[in-house]
Length: 407
Image 1 (cartoon, rainbow, N blue to C red):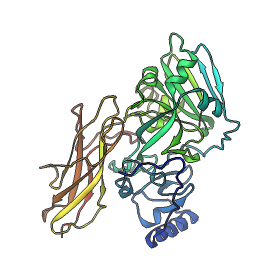
Image 2: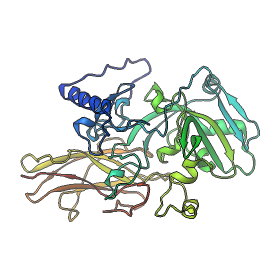
Image 3: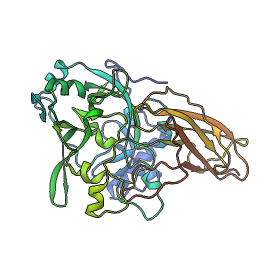
Image 4: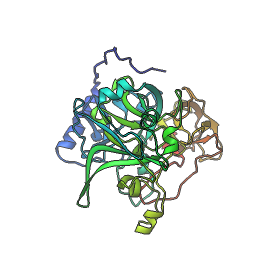
């Protein structure tokens, strides 16, 4: 499998095929005319966006964009140009020279650190981990349409992250008795219902202190795939919490608060929860989402592709649930609506908190109209045929399906 580029390796310029240029021109025209992108990826959905990316724009402001699925099946490490972008507000302008990270709350020794102090005082570590938005695959929920970014299945990516273990910084500050949760706040400012506040969230202190040099460390990340973070990915500093939904990996991190309770930030206290009722009582009672769920996706072929000689090659990715110690047990595909299943071999590394790529060739009968995939992890959990609808469209992990044309 391709490996991430090294620090001194020059990044190859983006090359454009005729098809890419057509995609770009249609997308640019659509955005110029103010045409709202559709959930289904069509030619006019494509647009070249900053930082050398080529993604399908789901919302232009704030920018939320994902790659075409076939790109995600090409490499275990997701390259920068194919890594999804999730934004809740405008990307803040953060000057690395004046940047400060504060650590406060229930600590013996509060700290305020420059970026240089942070990277020179504490040892650095590498972690390969998959990030996925809790709303990934939202557009697969049946009508009526759920509000929120209309993600297809591409709001996910696997990257090599470099930074400072959160545990090291907390140990340097000294946790006081009663410390139970670690709050994170970013430099981005979101305005909602007349109020302006930073994006934020929190994780239990046990999760903040867990992990080791090989896997599971919560990182104050400065680099992604051996390159400094770019603005859309949280430069100059972001959290990366392996196993947790992307919302807990707060970007543009500038404040850490140690507390005896969960963060009161809107995105922890109200937003990222599984709800079937939005009454204040129901919202307050629901627990915030932390670990992502077991999932798998067919990335190749696209809908409507015809098999060759009665056979079809399927490729995709699968992700075990985010609880520590959980791994994939098997991936299976079906072309007869789940009456029979064919094992799909893993063709990439298998590592905790990381997705795995799979590939299989299957015979396709003349009556087949749908191919589907499901995964099972080491806890015994298997993806369901369908899931219960929730108000915010989070954690969709029913069988992923693509249409096939056997004629």
